[in-house]
Image (tube, rainbow, N blue to C red; front, top):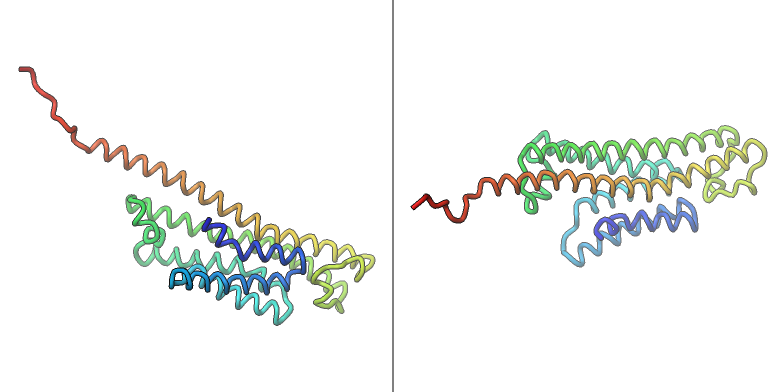
Length: 234
């Protein structure tokens, strides 16, 4: 449930995009992030750092997208957030107690080497997720650049939402259709791709942790003395 709650702004972004385009979706994502932080404060009188960081990044990057009418900023936002979290986890490994251990230490008892390895796995996940988003976003931005080069007078309104048949003809029409398809692909990747990667990663982490928990339980059972000592022959 918490995972779905954390992805709620992305789901709302997706719905708003399908109805009104990427700029309206960006505004919806900013408002949704503000509401999430407000609800957290009202219910628990505290704000989760992850939600606060997400709010700051979407407010800045989304705000720049709306102000400058440039989709690149909101498209880079998932990469920036993933790399920020990756940097935090990396810093915790280099400077002291791994962050993943601080988060889960009260629930799990694991050897230090396992905590360290798990923290590095989280760093790798954040870095790779950021790169994956960057590749998909760049795929769209290249298509937009090609359209702008072919039609230097293209306006922001013609790029959101796309109505290629009404606004373009010939080669420009084909370039517009390519850009529209790639933008839709990025939006789908932002919801389904990154969510899918997160779910697979969490399941893999659970399997990894389960193996070590079973090993620790077996070791503990082996170290436990029998409840009644064996009797010698009388």
